[in-house]
Length: 92
Image 1: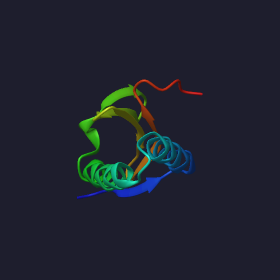
Image 2: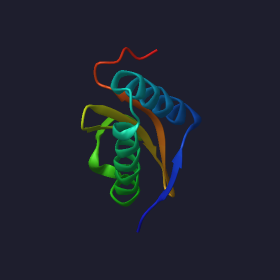
Image 3: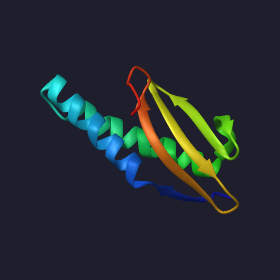
Image 4: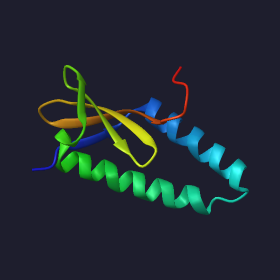
């Protein structure tokens, strides 16, 4: 059974930064639109199979997807997406 999916405020901020960067670099939003659709499909997969990622600490996992690291937390009823970062990005 799929768990409830929650995307944190920080994850939305990360996604917005990635989209803004890609739109500026590519001078178009075509890539960003595809990126967001694929990312949210990956989030849905995580809600169905939450243990796909690698355990980093108690109940916190990281999933390497494409060139991105998706950090998420699992509990009994939900999967919370904590952040989404490019692998080459310096995490603040």
